[in-house]
Length: 557
Image 1: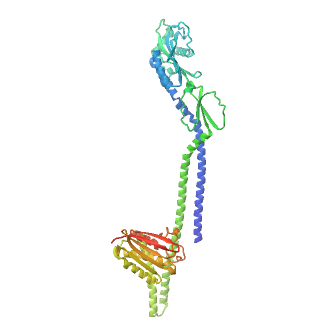
Image 2: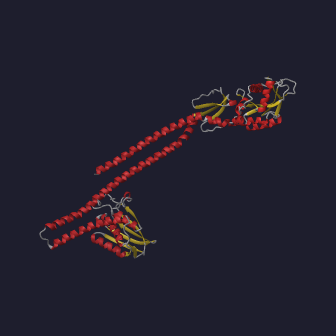
Image 3: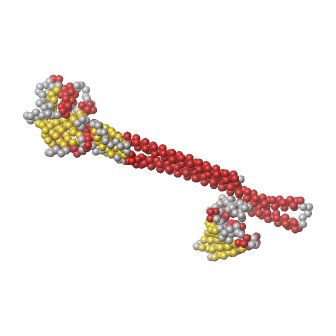
């Protein structure tokens, strides 16, 4: 049986080691996969997150192009130099990438103009040109006036917009209304080569129809219509770069599309993305060193690693609990096995003696008076042993399940201890027992349960002492309102490693005094008794010197 139990322990240990090894391998593999996943994810982010950088950085440009620039149309062609100056001031302050604005105060008529575009019987030319911008002193410069006698080249930006207007009017179907998107597209020119945007305020519907009439009927003379043309010069270097992933992109620059870096070191990772609209000749050039990217990889990886570590810790805890429970079950099985064996022996011995005595009585033809007394005494003692064992088991079960009630009686402590000493010295003449009582004479308790407690501790003191040291001193004192009992013997003592187990059911210390005749219930029975009586028990022991049990009970006078 011992070999089987040892084998069981080895199997439990082997299973636990195998389980821990497997989850450790899985943990290491998971960390490896998680790191690779983090690395791939950050590398993908390095390529994809540049879109967010572009979107955030170009937001002011989109706001200007889609919202601010169309405000020119609110003036319906009646912007003058002072109003234009105020409008441009707000633009220059809000959008630093705009470096200069040229304002053409424009007229449209069906008469030729000397400076401008004459197309399809339309004359489109400026009556004045102003320039605004950072660093211009004074705040605006008048470049041209129709009153000047000198000829002036108004520039390709204005001419391109004038031709676009004439072409649009010629192809206009007056029976339908063009959409705002169509109008906006036809009256704005984005020149990425020169980083310019040319914008003509969108003419009203009736103005467009008048322009159409000028082309068809060649009215002479016709009214003169006012239009405003603004040319915005942009500076890509003034775009404020918003790095949405500073831990990912170490450096972001605006470079021409044709930019080819001289430094192509393998220690650096680069990516790029072209700017939209008027900045389409430029790109964002994003650079990071590999060591810089590694930091971001580890920042991404660490939470995953912590979660994996937590799962690994939980699995280790589960493995430990399973291993512990298997060992506890194995030990419980061993204890129960020993308990059944010892209990069987405890019952078997008196039963065998009774059977032998019964057979002798049955087989004897006559019994003398001495033989009758002898057999009667044997049967009586062995029956008492069986009854005592049965009562102890029954009492233990009842106390453990709280199926009995305390029988409260007044106990004279001196008489009680002397009675205990008398019964044990009568049973064991070589047992030297002494006592002392301090601070009280009587108290309320259950004398039967208290007697069981004293008897068990006294029997243990006698049983686990060498022949020359079978001594026990019982101390009973009233200290700070509680009763303190001490049972001090000169026995073999208990190893410190066993002290936490001696009050457990079925536990037996393996020694020469405990080979046979112990079920492992004595001290567990004492522990249950004291708990039932609302007290507590502790033990101090030193191997080869002796043991002291300390019992604290509530004092009821």
